Amino acid sequence: MTGVSVALLAGTMSTILVASSALPMVVKAIRTRDLASYSPANLVLANVGNAVHCIYVVHLPPGPIWILHGFYVVTSALMLLWWLRFHPLRRGVERRPA
Image (cartoon, rainbow, N blue to C red):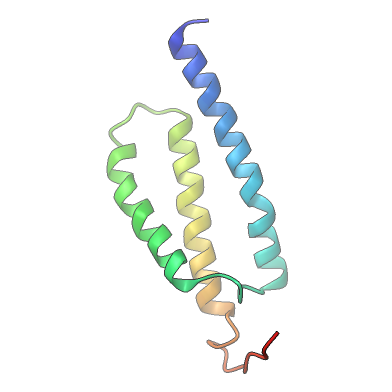
């Protein structure tokens, strides 16, 4: 195997692993609509970071990094939108202490 094919294989594997590790979180968030444990600051920073990282990714040749970054962009944006829509404080529901 050449260096390029090893790198492509590693990029493909990491994309699959990272995406599959995040999917349960996304599925649970939309299924339960319980995003109380998510930090809004973290969600905003993730989206800003993804926007800045787009500048880097678009200058790379198409490959697994584009897929992985696209996955990050979509899931981060969805999590922020769902937090804004479903967070109990946003819906006027009082949070009870645990």
